[in-house]
Structures are given as structure tokens and as C-alpha cells.
Image (cartoon, rainbow, N blue to C red):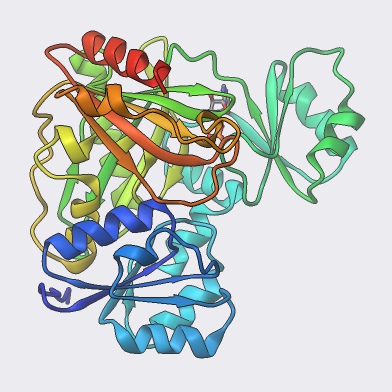
Length: 377
Ligand code: AMP
């Protein structure tokens, strides 16, 4: 039986990055208390939590203290050891579960889950040596991409194999991981994502698909609604919902998809709030963070309607030139723009420090203005 955790109770969040921070803010707005847990004392979610615990993921004493302080727990990034989740789950419910996490934090298990459930994904083979890689490339063909089975994100741990002349011994050495997944290259027309919320008693709600544009493998722009046909948008939402149901995830699931010649192919799953859902804070009936808290706590899910076409642009540490803070005046002066900064301290190239969401009459206008404001920083 699903239990509903009412406002006034305390929600625990494993991980203290920006996703944890924005989830904590949503939880507090709903009247929950929040405890965050992160190995870093400078975790940016700590500033908005009632209590922050700084401890390693394997510190059992600290995890038990965390579990004792809250009635339910969730997480904000998927590379938390499943043993950590299991320790907390001895005392309180944790959503998503250690089993869901084990699938989503390992590319091999994730691909096998997709394949076994008949969900369209790129053709793949698991490889554990250079000779195995050579055989797999011969079967899958080029171009293809070799990815680490474990812990890869934002394009890290990936080697593209362009054609038959590629040096596969070098590609294997470059991967530097005992196991890899070789994937056929998907000649996509667009990358999109659908964020689905699912409660313990099986209620689901999907946000409209966002169109995602990456720079250097890091999300640069997210555009909602995606510039796709209504038919593809509908199919993307129902595909994402069916993935969430098959995974039996509780909380949010970000489903990244390729659109290729009118077909949909699932690339990756993230059982948590997703960078491509930040526009929901300013452009949808309910934000993904509030939806996450609602799903985890067993409250009715909120509306997901897009209230205005939106474009979200990430602000990376790169715009802090020689330690100088960017000039925010143009963004702050624009009534259609919302500035979100995560108070993360030291900027570094590629580090996500904040984002801007612009709403406009059309997505094209929102994109144009978001890019123009980003260029002023
Ligand atoms: P990932 O870390 O798997 O999300 O990959 C990062 C980015 O690399 C994706 O957002 C795509 O732009 C690109 N990519 C990854 N896998 C493929 C593939 N099989 N075919 C085409 N592009 C890919």
C-alpha cells in the first residue's frame, strides 16, 4: 500500500547539487522540511535545507542519522552506490529504489532493460576487450560509438568510431574501462527528452517533450515545446510513460530520445529531475521539482501543461572570466527572462552554475532571445 507523506513531514535528498537545491526549494514551498546529504561541505543544496549532512556515501552511521531525521528519501543524481540506498531503505522508503538505480547507472543494464522490454534503442553490443570490440564493430558497422558501461555522463567516456579505418586498439585503450557498450550511430534529426512522473500507486504524468541542443556534449539549450509534429510529440510521451511503467520507477524519469526519420529511439534514462526540465519552473503549470516531490511523497500529481513557449539556456562556469562575475543586467532587465543561479561557489569551465529561461509568443522567439541574453554575459 502506498503511503502519502503530508506537508510538515521531512523529506531527505541524497545529493546536494543544483537538482537537489531546486527540489529542496520546491519541497519547502509545499511546507515540507528538508535534509540533504552530500560528501561535499560546499554542496549548493545545503543553503536551502533545514539540515545538511556532510559525509561519504559509505558512511553508515551518517546514513542512519539521515534516515532518522526524515520520513522519506529521494535522490538528485544517479551515481550513488546502491548500497547507500539500501542502508537508508532499511529505515524509510527511498524513491527511486536501489533496483531502479542499479539499472540506470549502468549503461549495459540500461540497454538490456530497454531491449528486453521491447523499447526501441540503438543497436548495441557489450564488449570487454579489443578483439571483442573488433568483432562487434564488424557486426554493427560504422559509424558507431563506444561508451563505458559504468558512470558516463555529458559525453564523458565515449569514443566515436567514424569508419573502417579507425584504430580500434587505440579506441579500446582510450575508453580505459573494463567493460564498454558499442552502439550503432543514430543519424538523428533532433534530440528530445520527456520527463515523466510516476507515483507508488501507479499514477503517471508526462511533461511535453523538450528539444535539446548540446555544445561540447553538455546541454546548451532546451526548447519547449519541441519543434516536432503533434504525432511524434504524442508518441514520445506515451513511449516515455511506458518506460516509466516498465521500470516501476517512483519519482521522476527523464527519458532522452533521438528523433530519426519520424521514428523514436531511446538514448538514456535518468531517474531524477533533468536539466532539460528546468523551463518547467517558469513555463509550466507545475515545475519538475515540485512534481518530483509530489510523486515521491505520494501526493496527487500536478498539471503539466506548457503555459508559454520557452527556451532554457545553461550558464556554465566559462562565462566567469578570470574570476569576474558576469554582468547580469540585461537578463535582469528583460521581463520575459528568469535568472536562476545555483550559488555553487567556484566557477569552472563546463560547470553548470545557473540557467536562464525565456518565455515568448513562439519558441523561435524564445530561442532567439535566450541566445541573445546568453551572449551578453
Ligand atoms: P550520452 O552520454 O549517451 O547521452 O551521449 C551524449 C551525446 O552524444 C548525445 O546527447 C548525442 O548527442 C550523442 N550520442 C550518443 N550516442 C549516440 C548514438 N548512438 N548516435 C548518435 N549520437 C549519439
